[in-house]
Length: 410
Image (cartoon, rainbow, N blue to C red; front, side, top):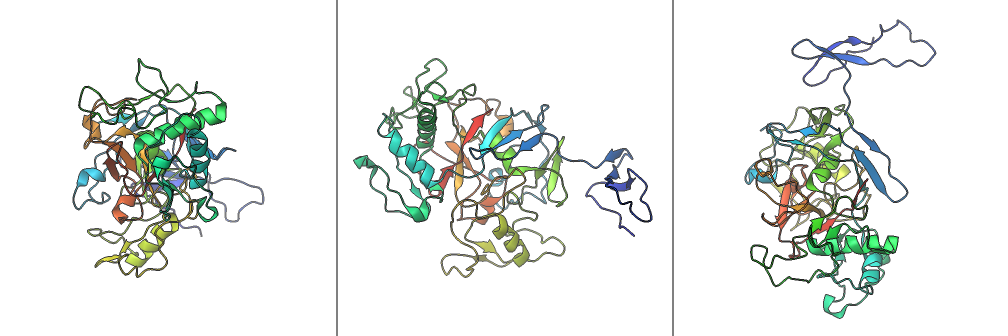
C-alpha cells in the first residue's frame, strides 16, 4: 500500500491514473493531484521558468517567468527578525512584481586564480584598481601603490577573492571583457547614459562625493545591459538565483506566483531553516541538526545551539570552517555554489531600506541611496546567511569578506 503524499497548503486529491494492485513492467509516470482551499484541483506544481546546466565557461542560464515574480507579505514565522528587520526580508515584497530578463550567472564566486590573471593583464593595459584584493585567509599580498603583479598562490587559487571595493569589481569586469574579446566594445560599465566611455580607472573622481556636483564617475556607473560583457548581478538576479527551487518537495519554499522561492529563514540550497536566536525549532529538529544542514551548504564559522553562539573566540566546533575553496559545499537548485557563506557578494544597485517603495530601485543607474548592496553573507554572522539578508557599504570602501560573482546578459 502506497501512503498518500502530503504538501503544505494543499489537500491530496488522488492520482492522474488509478494505482494498480501490482505495477506493470513498462514505465509509467504517476502524478499526484492537489486540491486548494477553494477545492480547485491542481496537477503537481513545479516552478515556472527554467534553469539550464552550467556551460563550458562555468555559467548557469536562468530563465525567469515572463510575467515576473510577485512579492508576498512577510511571514513573521519564516523571517529571521530580531532587530534591523529591513535587512532580512529580501526584495520580493508585497505590492511589487519584479520582471527579470533571462541571464547567465557564474556557478562560483570569482576565485583568486581568475582575479589574479585578469588583474595582472589589466594593470598592463591601462586599468587602475583601488585594492588588489586577496584570497580568503591570506593577507600578505603587495601594496597597491607598487602596482605589483599578483603572485600565483597554489593553495589559494580556488579560494574566493575578497576585500575589494565595488568600483574595483566593475573595473575588473570591464577588463575581463576586453581581455577575452580583444575589444572594449562589449564592456558593460560606462561613465553615464550620455558619456559612453568605458570605466577603467577606479580612482577617477574619488575625491568627490556622490551627493555633490562632482558625482563619482565610477561610483555612479551606468550599466549598459545591452552589452554582452561580464558584470555584477542585479540584486533581483542574485536573489532569484539564490532562492529558486524546482518544487517544494523539501517543504522549505514559498510560492511566488508561478515559482517556488526558498523561505527567508534558510540558507540558499538548504532544506531546513538556519538556527538563530528567536527561532522556534521545527518539529523533529534539534539545534545540531540545523547546524549540520547549514554546514552542508555554507562555509561559515559559527552556529546557534539554543543558548549561545559557537565560534571564535574559542572556536569550539571544528566541523565548521571559517572559509574554504569554492565548490566545497552542496549547490542550490540552480546549480550554484556558496550563494550563502564563504564571502558576501557585491551586486549592482544601491541600497534602499525599503525597495518596494523606491520606484527607481531597479534602474540601471542610481545616484542616491545608502551605498552599494552585497548579498549572501560571509562566515562571520550566521543570520546574514539567510537568503533575504541584505547589507551595504560605500562603493569606494573595502568591507571585510566581500567578493563577487559574475553575471552576463543573455
